[in-house]
Length: 121
Image: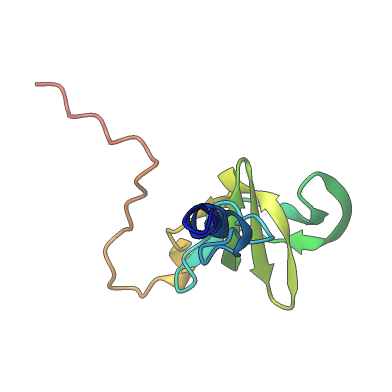
């Protein structure tokens, strides 16, 4: 019996002690955005308080610079001036509007835009 008690305790101890690798209480957010990159609005959109809709915080003009906070499916959480809200993800681009580029800069190429067709011979 004296030999059996330490064996039983050794088998039960891992079940009772807290795990060192405990799971976080809050699930991780969807895809986190790159904090240092600038994004631009491709069209005028409403800045929504919630991803599902709700009251609008204001209007984001076409070409406005935005800071991407997080992407969640078809919606993106962005910072526009002092406000943080949601806009459609398809209204964002990394390519700055032409007015923001220096005069001698080459034309930007948007990876999402189709390639120009080759001239016919």
